Length: 322
Image (cartoon, rainbow, N blue to C red):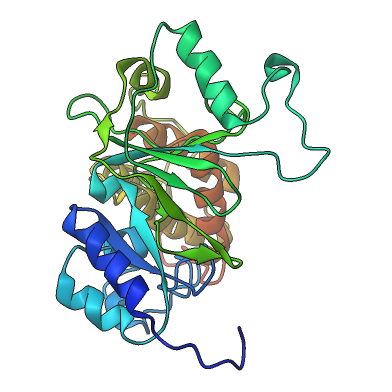
């Protein structure tokens, strides 16, 4: 792609407008690629130079839109692919993948399965469910995306990945916090195309049950060893402030809140006032209580600690006398 003049194409603009007309929130992907075009940085690397990040990092999910004017402006510059942000669009997309190479075999549990479609069929049989027609896209590698309406009641559903805590081999799902490549786009020269054009069906109850996360644990404050003086009381207040900030975060902003709290406490850890283990101990249960998942929590706290370490806070001006 480097060095080539990429000309906007009416087809991609038409596709983006068409998806938005269904109420699906779209955003640009890099041309012929799965990765978001904007922002061009992660929350870890956000400097605020991007005009939309001046008051805090704004990711692709927050930038996704159904506004035709914004869509026309974006797709008039380059042949961006089209991403659909599942959470804002009220979608749960079941991604049925196919083996990627000759040695890509299923684990023993799914030994008879040829691909994700077979695994989903087995799951439906096990749970007395059906796989009814719904809006379907054929992916560039020959898999399928089944689009469903997110349940109107119950907890928000998040992404799952295959047999790593998900539904099974070659079956991923995308919901809040996830996106899919939309029909009309290409990735590595391979097209995504509509296979069945109809309104998305409601997510089957048996699938919703499998995807519903376990009840959130209550947030119980974790005690860490602090000195019994003004310095200790200062640290206790700082910890409480960050835990309160995290648990008060609303949908769509919980991971960002966790990152900000990890940066703030990471600065204190870098200055020697806390241990990194203390930061994990106080933030992990608070993050779990908001619905974030273990892996996401661990990665976000680690990122926050790295960023916080760049600006250590030393409590030399906090007296130690009671």
